[in-house]
Image (cartoon, rainbow, N blue to C red; front, side):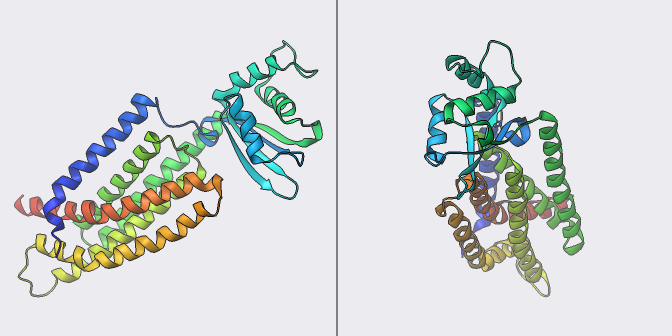
Length: 309
């Protein structure tokens, strides 16, 4: 039988260290989280490209001008694409238009969205009718999404804590809440360190991994409660360790089965869902890890010191 309780302080300190390092990289090296159209504002256009153009050729154009763009295929038969560009790329778009003057270009300062449309027409050889829509996503929308996303995550954690307080004991609710906070901070540190752009699908991924993590945690807690009832000669530390070992096979099998379905997203070539899938894959590993090495040990430590008080 594996002695997980033996490594509880090592796992807790390692998690804190990695989370701190992740946020140091995020704000010390990258100067914050990656810019996202959904949260930071930007330019969005839906275009119908000539048949000789595909996603790779569009990305090649933007890469050649060092313009960061997200290109999403909307309709394969009509060759329609959604093109998103962050506001930080607007100066490069203006420089491109000034280098490649056409009848649409002039020295007069234009709105950002007009500059974007001109660059699309020039760089991709588009006509007016090929630009199906073009809009500027303002920072107000991004602020509302940020506020909503944070609220959803906080409410989710509060509701789960209240549920576990009724379903189990308060110490289990505290352990689960601590594990959920650990998973959330670890995931945010991971996103910031690797500059994964926050978006609405990413919020969905974070909520999903919280649900996955709490489900795995409840299974272990339920076994701890079962092993604690009746005549028992084991200490609470031993009960926690026994319970983790008893549920270890189920935990690993569930994680592997879930990973297979998410990896299928990546292998299927849905590039616009790569970030979503990566966050979910990371979340599964962290959720499984936190259930074993964070939630259960926290309950054990809480029980030990609360009994002494």
